[in-house]
Length: 162
Image 1 (cartoon, rainbow, N blue to C red):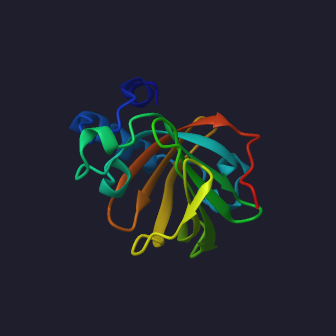
Image 2 (cartoon, one colour; image 1 turned 90 degrees about the vertical axis):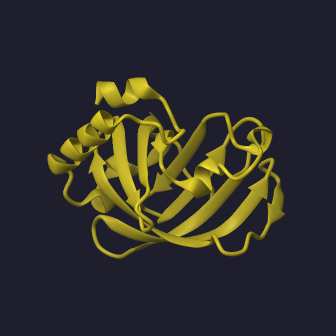
């Protein structure tokens, strides 16, 4: 886990060895039903992803998110919130529908530019997410398009606004 946290990269350039470490962690995951675990609740910092919809490599570098990104989850209300920091402070909130004890369908219902200007974004309002590793400090998830997400817990008391 320490090696993953030290990389602190989101560019898709994570070394293959580190991806192997993520797979090894997934193989020894002790939390078999993460959607029933209070460890999932709180605000998570995104350390790494392969998701092009998050990284947005098609945009000019100036218009790509380049600050920290967070995802908050509330298991009890089945709500999630994605938050970008500098330079745009965009937010998206979603309802989570359990498909089993590890996987949820994600339906985004609110998008905000600069955290306050509501918009509707076509074509990106749904997805699935499987939690493949979870402990007090680290979460590894995989999206329905094969994307890898590695996150670090930063605030277990944070709650997604209703």
